[in-house]
Amino acid sequence: MHQIQQLAAEILARIEAGTTLTDALADAHRQAGKLTPAERGALQDLSYGSLRHLGVLRHCLRQLVPHPLPEPQVERLLLIALYQLQYTRAAQYAVVHEAVTLAGMMARGKFKALVNGVLRNFQRRRDELLANAAADEVAQANHPDWWVARLKAAYPAEWRGILDASNVHPPLTLRVNRRRISVEDYLGRLEEAGLAAKALGDDAVQLARPVAVRDLPGFADGLASVQDEGAQRAAHWLDLQPGLRVLDACAAPGGKTGHMLERADVEVTALDIDATRLARVGDNLRRLGLSAQLIEADASRPDDWWGGRPFDRILADVPCSASGVVRRHPDIKWLRRPGDFAALGEQQAAMADALWPLLASGGKMLYATCSIFPEENRQQLEGFLKRHADAVCLKEEQLLPCERHDGFYYALLEKH
Image (cartoon, rainbow, N blue to C red; front, side):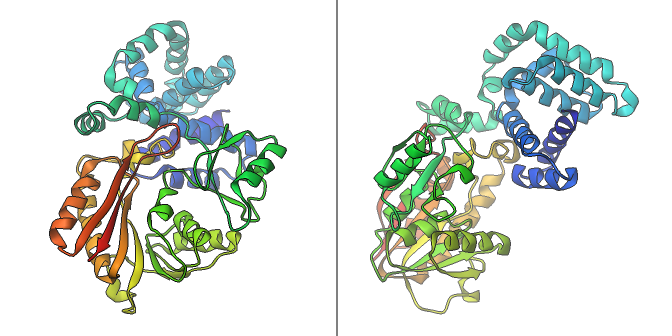
């Protein structure tokens, strides 16, 4: 166990240095050599779980050790072990023993007794410590205090529900490929496999409990894809008709690209600036038995890649804070800084402005983010409409995280 604790503590260090959890986990897998499936699962749980509950864990640790430790890696080890003691079913004695063993390998073992004392003190004072954390708004939020303040300002009635929804495990929602199977028939396949599920919308099916994709019937054959119900709104909003030319800007990893092609016989150009991520779009389309023109390019610089023929539909899935998908990526709330939004806003405006001339008269562009902050959504829409007199907003919607879906924003624009 102490190897997994060590890897998880190192992942926390990477997050603090600005690395995403996805990249940090991938690096840990490479450095550790061969991990068993059980060890990989344990490492993922410790990494995601400790970040999800970091506010409470830090508050408890500060009660036990009032000052930051001079050895940051020991502090990270304690946070990981506290998570195991409180939020997992790991044997308590084993968690303490392995953490103390690992502490003995650090700084010539001088923190071994401290780690043992802190963890055993937590076990004795657990109820008191957790009650104190529950009474502390910032700790209980498990988000940075500036994030909580922004949510309060934007959503005075909903902010607490948003935080609660952002701190839980996300649901596993599938998009049924209705070119190959009906939602009703796929629900039957799930039932035969012993997987309880329910239909949410036209194409969406939500499982009662998450499972590995390898356990989903027909997944490898393209019968279904993993995609949040909120993300599935995009293809519905675009009003796709056979024969239309569609641009999917910032297409990776390809969920919305595949959904558009499943829903209508359209000609799709899928664009992404990252070659590795663009390759994933191709992989996903091949699994679904679909195809699109893939272009590695910067959507905000169409002179580098656009041939001059207008598009009938454009999905402008712009870069954003990803604040609406924190429960799937709990590192986001600790990686973001208040100053990030100005730069993100400039990118969003630049991309939307660059794509607008590519849209045919009478065409529609969907501005989309996975953010819940107004400066990336409604405020961007207002600025865009002021800059473009030929743009009309047909409808907009802000989805907030809930038990059905993550947080997304959509604004459908028509060119007159």
